[in-house]
Amino acid sequence: MEILNTILNIALVVLAIGLIIVVLAQKSKSGGLGSAFGGESAAFTSRGKAASREVKLQKLTVILAILVGVFAIAILILSNFLGDTTETTSFIGKLLVK
Image (cartoon, rainbow, N blue to C red):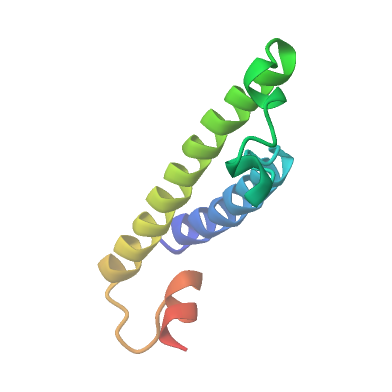
């Protein structure tokens, strides 16, 4: 079980880093307060490769965010399943205890 816990922790860190990279790779949807008053109309007319790339990045963001949540819950459940009451065995559990 300790090996599974370590694998889940490593996978969670990799997924979190991937999520950060995917979010940073996306273009900003708003140009600030100016776009709220019609300052940015080119975003609605752009089609093609850039638009499909953004859609793919948005879908990947949702998938990675769901996986991060699932892995975090799995680590928490595994930590409780191991029943170590003196010391929390998961990385996230150690962060939460402090």
